[in-house]
Amino acid sequence: MALLVLLRGVNVGGHRRLRPRLLAEALAEFDAVNIGAAGTLVVRKPGTRARLRAALRTQLTEATQFIFCEGRELLRLDANGSFRKPSPDTGLVRFVSFLASVPRTRPLLPLTIPADGEWLVRVTTMSNRLAVGDYRRHMKTIGCLGQLDRLFGTVATTRSWNTVNAILKVLKDDGRTAPRRRRGG
Image (cartoon, rainbow, N blue to C red; front, side, top):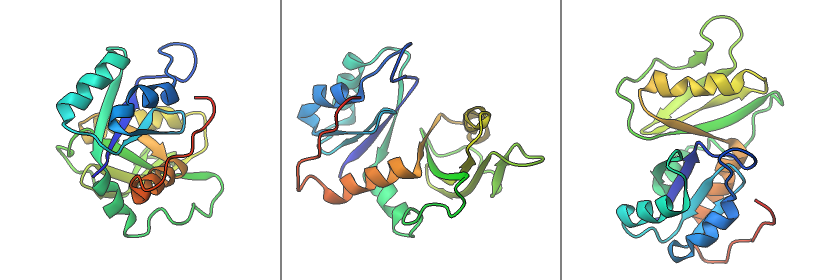
């Protein structure tokens, strides 16, 4: 089964610059497919995690963190229909936060950030190491998403509904067709 690699601590421009398309090309032996510009890879032939981790370390800076997630975890979450339709509220974006480990403590859901007043981030569902919710399009949202690490007691990285659907498309295709190459990145 495919393995997801979700990078954290990189930027597509400027400081700690990463070109995800080039990273996927460098990991061609693992049949890596780049999804978007945020550092999301679907690795269709991951081999051992130790070997993949070593290959990633040769391509990334020391400051770059990455989270592995089994593709089947996301497929299980998709089976309940969470990602078939976008939020009807155009001001909200559905997301999945991928956690590095199972949370030490499981907060009561729904979890809202901030806890008082109008929320900017709302986690509604947990499935193993995946936290699902919505966030509002607002300048302060990124800071609120950054609080998930502390609340779950582990490193988390977040991807939007659109990115999650693109990942699911590659997982469901499972390498039967060549991925469409995107320009840029």
